Amino acid sequence: MTEQTKSKIVVVMPARQAAATLQQTVSEIPMEGVDEIILVDDSSTDETVQLARELPLTVVWHPHQTGYGGNQKTCYMQALHHDADVVVMLHPDGQYEAGLIPDMVAPIVAGRADLVLGSRLAIKGAALAAGMPRWKWCANRFLTIIQNRVMGTNLTEAHTGYRAYSRELLLTVPFLRNSLDFSFDSEFLYQASELGFRIEEVPARCRYFEEASSVGFKTGVVYGLKTLWQGVRVVLHRARIWPSRKYRR
Image (tube, rainbow, N blue to C red; front, side):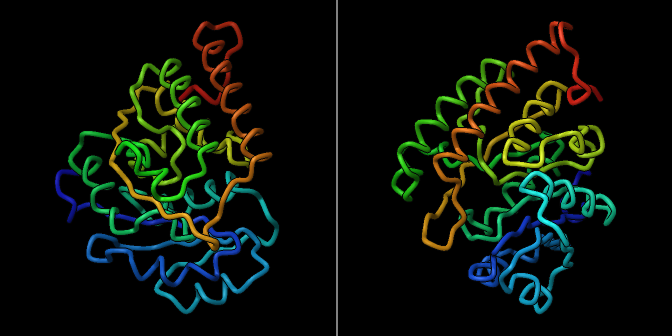
């Protein structure tokens, strides 16, 4: 892949109760740089699926709720089956700016990166100014520092839900072995780093409003503990004390 025009760019949208924000989010996607949009609905009880079928999307739905991680597994498998070269995960709640997709894709198409993260913390003070709760900001920074130590990286944010992946990465990282819940993202990032894939960041603006999905305090605590535990598992795997299939090609 040397030119973006020669690469198939697929946007995947893991959806759950997204009827209020879906149409606006899709309208903001720069379609001149996107070949296909795939929405995977995780058994929503609102009008998400009906609305999605009226939009220029490929719609896949789960008859039973599988969780955020389970939804992503379907997203990436569908994108691979549709011959995607680059896959961008964009939440349909409008929290991340869809117009950033070309910037997310560019490092992968240029051959510089395999995974691109849209960092909300790359610009100092921007996330708090946009409405990120301070407790989330503090937890995000703390966990990112720990993960950087484990992975040997220097990321400004390890907990963004705005990500772009190369096809090679998705074919190599055993993400189907990951959790079904929010800790899927942390596991995937650890995997990509442990398997030697190149990671870049792009500054990303975020928006917080009533309709945007948000992880509550209790769920956030569980997510944080699982993220720390996976860091321990990486260290134990690396030391060959407790090998894990998650961190092998």
